[in-house]
Length: 267
Ligand SMILES: [Zn+2]
Image 1 (cartoon, rainbow, N blue to C red):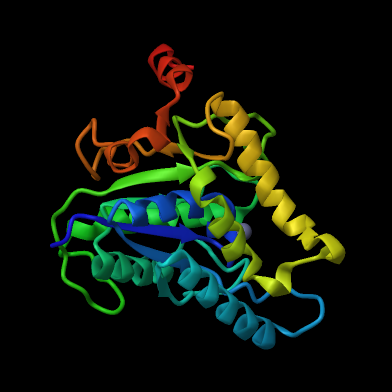
Image 2 (cartoon, protein in one colour):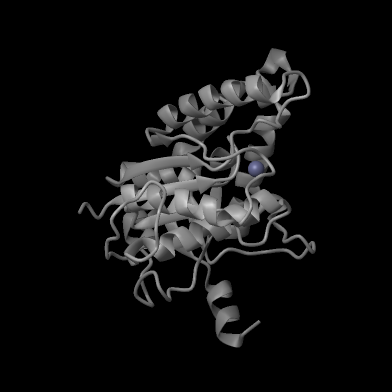
């Protein structure tokens, strides 16, 4: 069983590019086989086209973005606002996890402004949890396997939880070296772009990602562009100190000591 496998699980087409793709690109550079899955199709992301047309446009865009990221593409399993924490989706996602066998799982924050994001986080956590349980039926049926997986949660949109509280990450990842590729992958979601200044080739969609990367970079006090991660509690997933992002990313990984201290204080 190959041990260098990572999967990013987002809610909608473009979420991986916004919150996780820099780290996914660096993992690929570090020799990881990378996988790309948006649970929802993006079918609600248009006021111009109906759901079926939008679904097919956004699926093609997501496929193109995954190709730019060099990640294996997995088709969506539901539609926008239908990412509910239910058994059907859990069985389907668990089958994908059993096929991929990730050692690193990147997903949304458990606290985020949008319920599709938080439900994606919950489904990803539970699907990873069931990987070694033969009595949990997946759809389609897949054999269980025993291996360690470490789950990392991205920072939420706006860097705040739904109650407006600021969140800080447990670790920063320096995404500067891959930032341009990340922007290119985001730009593949052409239907979502609201062009403000065609002459400069910039738009609010790309600038929003740029702003977030710079804001997290400032938070790190070390990197220009960064993504932030919080590690899921290890029970049922991996050893207590397992943190495979750190050795995989080397100097591009920075533990946030202030966060570690706050864990000890129980704040
Ligand atoms: Zn989203």
